[in-house]
Image (cartoon, rainbow, N blue to C red):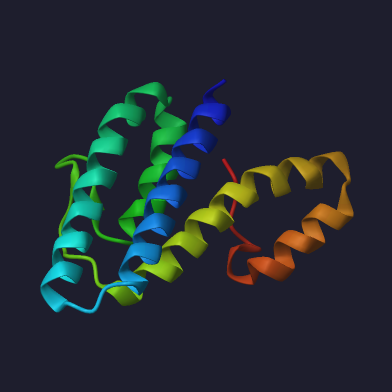
Length: 132
């Protein structure tokens, strides 16, 4: 159950960031871009506020470690720096990788070599990261 809640939270984050990337690709105004990025940070903070309570401390720590790379403070429930457009693609890729890592670890345990190899090919920087 807890892992499903984590997966759902990661998927929601991926969707929100991906949608923002799509919106930004259509923008030409710098002021709109800044507003959109600010709204994204608020949306993510609200999403986390609603979902973190559903996770055990182990799963919250896992998510916290991912978000700390992007200067998110779980204690303050906010990002401590503003997002830039350039950070979004690596951010969503990392989230997708972390979501896939959960399944890849289980696949490794089950001996499903093809899924593990596919994961390593798509997310080589996460190959030595632990799932949970």
